[in-house]
Length: 230
Image (cartoon, rainbow, N blue to C red; front, side, top):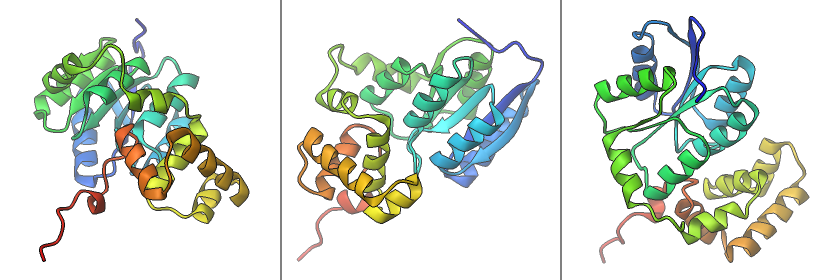
């Protein structure tokens, strides 16, 4: 197992909740040899920051606006195999835990964990070990060896299709997605058509549900509210 041998461990923290991001960064620098070289509030900003800074350790929220943490792990980790990753979230599932591990994530820590568990996890991953907080370990035991239908569907999508699916689920228009990804509107329309076919979806709402089931987004509040009383 590879681990970080440099005198200083360069860290990037990617978290959209400012208070939590500040807490993680502040805690990291209390560990001897750790320095925070950058912080980001969304996935695209975070991925660019990682590409620019080439950090040793990336601590990221699983659900990020723009580009989710799983895609950062997938894209940056593939090109930088020596980098180490810690995922944090308030909404891990057995499916997401299994996929993170399959993609090579080194640490998984629930946001409900104590500060001491977070610090312990950072030390363990920094020193070359893996780390699962007790909540993540319990969820992993619940996972199914055969995988779910959501996992199988997600495996059929390309990196770009997953990016488009997240953007659609976040309520972006075709023009907005095209501008963000710097491609033509026709290209995005083709991706949306492919997504509809592959996921057997007939509307943006159904695509949003698929994105949630595949762990690409958290379920938006508008889809998770009780019906108004008569």
